[in-house]
Length: 209
Image (tube, rainbow, N blue to C red; front, side, top):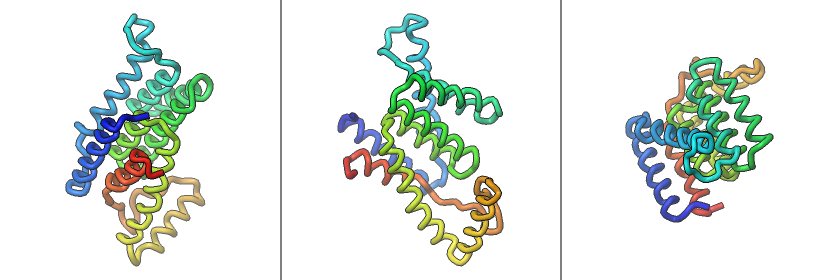
């Protein structure tokens, strides 16, 4: 369980990212990529620590699974990413614990959404960091429910009269078993998602649920 100081730190980080997202519509690498690299490198060090004689806490298999998921993120621009991603799932569900399974699923799900263009890369990194720090299924579900509900309202508001056209495009993609189109007659949506993620995370972090 996170301390009040940790929850406050995460909350301030999220609020800062939300403000930046609204103003610039782009999240800085220093506040997303760098922390993600830190989490991934820590997972690798915890995995290889016993091998190289580093005095780290017992890593368990969760660290190994997360390190493999991190490798999939690093290789996400190539088809090779499927190999560490598949290995991460095997390690997490065969040898890992429920928190480790939640973290791996969140990382691979976020990676898939970012690769498909459904979720921004910066937003996906934030989700990955949150679920690595707080590997709780309730947090993942809260983020998903918040983004789905608020995001849908915001998209309909932005599209207005083009909403039926957007829904038809989504239905056509679904029938063809394709990801929703990133572009089209309604254009690509450009909505800041960080404020929504911040609200969802705050609901979890501060015990509203």
